[in-house]
Image (cartoon, rainbow, N blue to C red; front, side, top):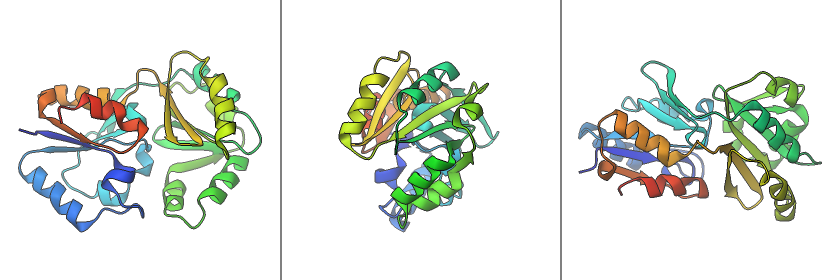
Length: 235
């Protein structure tokens, strides 16, 4: 008997145009009517959750930033947090410095980047459905490191390169940093969290809190950042 479903969003629940189909909406509603707890489990920050998901009345819990934060919407506050130390985040971002490299950090449910990065990001995703997500979930700042300073709630880092070779050069430096988990969402990109952050661990922790056994948890995903999620779930 399945009592909880953890669902990745991009590439899994949502279409290529980042939409929730009526068929999927009906399936989720049917599951909820039968007492199944439906939980979005995504690499997105909280500000990037689509309105189509937020408007579903049965979505109470959301796991964001690749398992770094679990939010209870009923109380509008995190109930589980696995943050990256600020010093580790800064060291990682500095290891990824270079012309044309997109670098962001995520905190408080939003992504932060400097104005140069914003131009690169907008150029990369112009005329795609991703742009509306970026406009909703990103905040530009004058200085990335100044904004990072004093912040102890770093959820996730995003590093996007123009080539695989460039990514491999950065990866060689980043691998020397301890206390992080490296995720490969795209051949030229990296996402980095605390080593304590994982989609699967976050989902099982929520399941335990709500009285669900592992065997009663189903998970669906499509990417490298979903491997922990798939291994953790009973189905």
